[in-house]
Image (cartoon, rainbow, N blue to C red; front, side, top):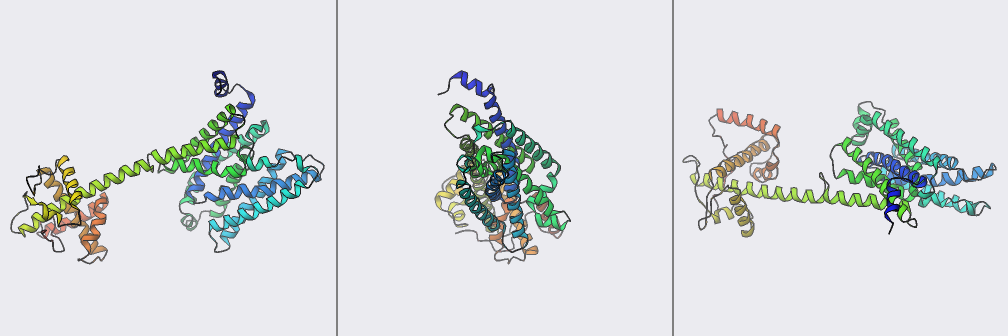
Length: 450
């Protein structure tokens, strides 16, 4: 285990090499998280993988060209230039296939990924047969070599990160439209093709800059995982992008710092594992789409739906027993009558009754009789009224048959929106003026239960 002095050295960035690597990983994570958000929302998660694999032949060809001109072949700017050119060609190939054929995005990306990676493997095999090939060290672009980063890498990464942040802010509105509805943007006259090229060009820059840090195999995880984690926390694009950049930066910082404690472990893999830990935490506890939050919401909704069905059943049984002879008021209803209204099991119905009692909507049961409280009766009248409003709407505007409208209204009445309530209430006012009561009559016969 590392000693306290070693931990402080890493946390306070006292060592030059550690400081360089950690800051590079942090900046790269920020840029990857930002670009990954756009890729995830535009359903192009595979694009990062495609571009990273498309850079491999460019790295190999750049090495061969530099050797042919008498250089060592290990010049990082030349290798990254080759990777950039190759990545841009891969990006344009995906756009060409998608725009000039009926092949979809995922198939086009799969084709380009496999073809370019195959070409890269072939180029590397040629390099291995060259006298300089054994010492080329090009495998670091495949698996990443974070600890070997130098000041030149830092300058490249900070330039890419600043460019990505500035252009994302300047073109935020355009990128947002491109991600959510590309066809609408084209119909409105936006230069969709050029915006697409700009977005994918930024992704290519980030991918090439990250080759040295995490390698072309793991860069896809660095691009997509922070964005996928951020998606569990927010429904707003701006919040999600900021959170994605923060998660990416934290993943880079923590992964690079941990690798400083354990030098034998590859930093790229640790960075990705930290990002995966953020993803797992977000998937379970995310405020917007987390598994736990969704489970709680579903349970609340089931409880709400069950309570509303119980209240409406009680109201409609009382109403059907009176048969319009007098005003509906609180009366005891037999358990078997409520049981016959829906396909409830005895256990479920008893659970709903117990919950309604705990909520103060029904009185304590006396034998088989179920009696609404005043609050329960008002709630039951409101639920029944909303159900009838939906039935009226479905019959008049959706051409739903009267015999089926009760079932269809059952599926939507629990999510009645404010605007729809206003519209339906206007319709209800018309009915009142025509002499109807506050709760409109059911458009279909109601069975009073068994």
